[in-house]
Length: 328
Ligand code: P6P
Image (cartoon, rainbow, N blue to C red):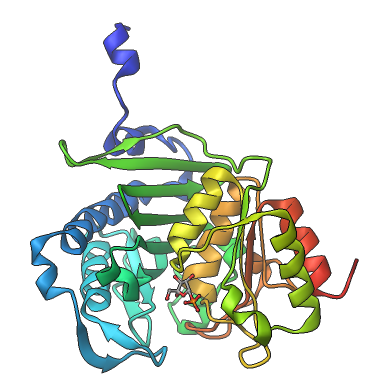
């Protein structure tokens, strides 16, 4: 093999053609990931470019979260639903922006269903702060009929997960069992290029990410846990989950959005925020907890349910959760 060949950066399409040969669990996953990548390319242009005019601002609606719907939220949700429908391998999609699950079809090859936050952190879009898209992917076994109840599977049953960061660069992270792969969009070629493969959390935690403004709303043990983190690590908090998570994945860190006295289940969503990132962090050697349970063990009860989230370096998550539960 010539030197050029060994040093040629590996494209996403090349990776997808050979990543899971022979593993039936992932049959068709290449098509799903490829559509997520195409959707991300479309959205990153919208987010960054002069056509911003049609994605800045609000639709005037309030979504199921009770939040003002940004034009960008709906544009992203519609784009990904369209892309995932077109790939022919997805049977249903849940979206933060859509009240009920979108059933696409139950053909023999439609073996996956997705839960997604199509544009997380979109309230930052006009502040030029990094935002992202998050995807959890479960596999549909056999000819089980699709019902909402059937779709509410624990995060531990995900076969894959992904997220995109629309930041100073556009980054795509794909994860399957024991594998977390990072790709960066090359603005010249328009291709996602594999960056150092096989991402694992660094053993050393470098920072903690939390909204310290909520400190007074926390119960005593959680205040103690946050104080302990403050005394040991630097604070890094973007206010955009995907950006905070991605930095911590690369540099080591812990992110926490705990429940508080007014909102015991916290702010973040189980199905399409905590579950996908919980899957990815565990493949990278980390941990994700609600403060009382492993995130991936939680049996979902509704599409948009919230959960507290403590996620990052396993030893620091375990220590923080122990303090939050009143332990030493
Ligand atoms: P707060 C963005 O609105 C978001 O849903 C997450 O991306 C982020 O981690 C969190 O909310 C920030 O919430 O209350 O600190 O502004």
